[in-house]
Image 1 (tube, rainbow, N blue to C red):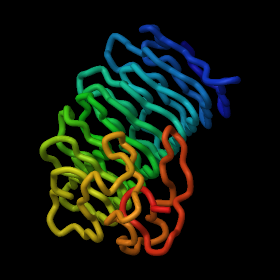
Image 2: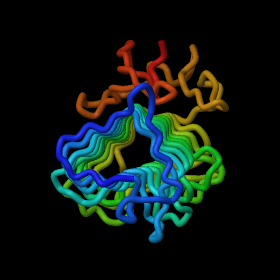
Image 3: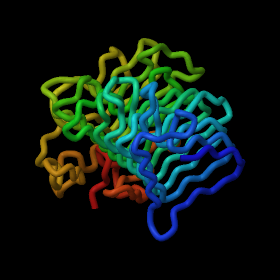
Amino acid sequence: MATWTQDGLTLRGVNGRAHLAADGRSAQGKAIWVIAGDGTTVDRIELSGAAVPDRNGAGIRQEGAGLTVTRSWFHHNENGILTGANPVSDIVIRRSRFFQNGGGDGYTHNLYVGAVRSLTVTGTWFRGADVGHEVKSRAATNTIVGNRITDAGTTASYSIDLPEGGRSLVAGNVVIQGPASENPTLVSYGAEGLTRASRRLWVVNNTFVNRRTSGTYVALAEGTRAHLRNNLLVGPGDLTDLAGVPAKANRRVGPAAFVDAAGDDFRLVAGSPAIDRGARVPPRWRATWEYVHPTRQVRRPAVGRVDLGAYEWR
């Protein structure tokens, strides 16, 4: 357990991941690591077992400005990563795993980012939050591209929660809502009020899977400036709950469109109705990355007209 106050630190596991199992211990009654310095990089670290008396413990409690996490695991904590509010802080997460975090109270999550300047998440696997959300962010700008986000068999809530709005791109993700999810919504935007300066949301080329009997894929607050394009819907439910939202080339398909839907492999097969059916997307809002399981990413290729969903057929 440690508190890091220096700026510009790199904390890296050598010859594999360094595992810190808290077993209920913490720094400052907050987390396994409390990071108070600015510009910190965490690479190849595994943090588990954070639990504190106020039930808000975390693998990392980020209090400084700027955190980059790569190739790291967070599991069986009350929160995987929990950040405070900092208007000059940028949070970047790449090629990492968050699983079975959450205290079971609905207020703790796999990833909980406070009111920071930006959040970027790519090539990362979120699985099985305990009642809470898989990804929750109050950042002014959110870029969530090329990830796998799945409830598995747990009672997670939203897959992605952006409760205050913000300039956001959700693209190229495989998002799977499990049958036991406690909330029927996969992506929620502005549920606590559109308090951020931007109300712009692009949801592009995702593969959304709903294993409940009903649901809403993208829930939007009134006043959201949303664009929904080229998404695949697998399972029941409405694309969105807000009338008049610009939506193009979103299509519901069955499991036969994919390599192994039951095994969560949502790459397209030859002859899939998703191939070459996409609509044009402005360059800044395109899905530029594909998720490669587990926890890798590759550039999405350009093969003729864009395909629907998180993967380009080739």
